[in-house]
Amino acid sequence: MDKSGRIGERVPCSAVAGERYTAYVPRPLPPAPPLDLTDIYPLLDQANAAIGRLDGMSMVLPDPSLFLYMYVRKEAVLSSQIEGTQSSLSDLLLFESAEAPGVPIDDVTEVSCYVAAMNYGLERLKEFPLSLRLLREIHDKLMTNARGGNKQPGEFRTSQNWIGGSRPGNARFVPPPPERLIETLSALEKFLHDETVMLPILIKAALAHVQFETIHPFLDGNGRLGRLLITFILCAEGLLKQPMLYLSLYLKANRQAYYDHLQNVRETGDWESWIKFFLQGVIETADQAFDAAMKLFALFGNDRAKIDNSGRATPTTYEVYDAILRNPVTTTRRLREVTGRPLPTLLRALDGLQQIGIITETTGKERNKVFAYRAYLDILNQGTETPYR
Image 1 (cartoon, rainbow, N blue to C red):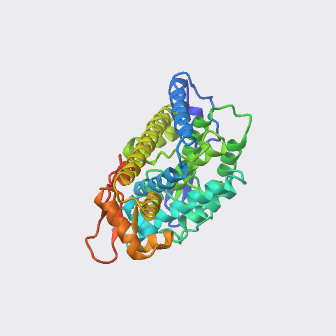
Image 2 (cartoon, helix red, strand yellow):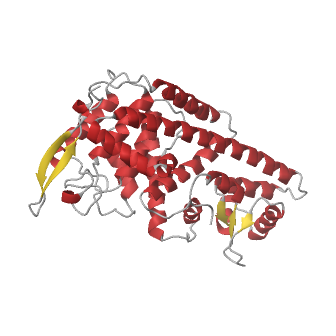
Image 3 (cartoon, one colour):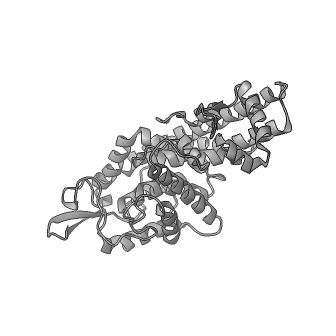
């Protein structure tokens, strides 16, 4: 198949200093000539089966909100790490407990803004279509109070940006010039809602992600929002009942291959190779999430049985354990706020949970103690480069 017709338009431009450069304007979706899905269908079947198993699990977990609460935070950490932050999951949880994290506050604030943007987008999708307006709203949540907060949060760019290099003239890739931005974004929005496009939802999400990254419509935050877009599409289209699939771990582990695929689509029109890579990521990510949820389900059951058989099971002990399930890095101050129990009663319960090996005090201090549910964190951190610290 001759795929050259899929390659975007190279637009000559000039910078403020008069330097000439070429920007790239992608062709509207879907690709033409049409995709050859012959070799893709087996992977697509596997990916749909993996998602179905993951989504079905949310119906059998005793409290799927527990898993979602923590898994969303894991995704926020990983997606932000791709952009260069050093924050770990435990840093984010400490920050949310009003304690000082172990990395610069800017890093963990950025991750916290990602959580806020993700939750905002998922809530808005229940009543509002996935649209350019919604993407701008989510971007505002993503960038406000984060680094890059001075780069037009919630507004499409009005100047040229680029990827790699020090200026457009020596950049690795230059997205569309600002005067072509609305044209390309409107075409993307039309593709998302065009019912005449008969493509499987996963393939639609794969195409839309690359198109968004190629357009690069904001001055900052495009990578994070582009990764969120995948999950938003799967939820909006009904493939996921719960937002339980996030690809950042796979993209982080295969970062160079990911960037190569994006550029290969732009230079050769080879969407098929990208879709295979994307579907492989869906399979691996869904399987990892399913395994993590099952391990957590087993852990919670075993640890609750430990409490039952410990001889130290009091109503406060169970109350504290339930609170730690919802925030596996916590403090006595946070537990007092959550449970309303007096400090001496909490300390006895915490001591009991430490004695039977469920939680660990991490600071060694007499005051301002921090307690961690390490086994829980270890399961969530599997596959990442930042274990609990």
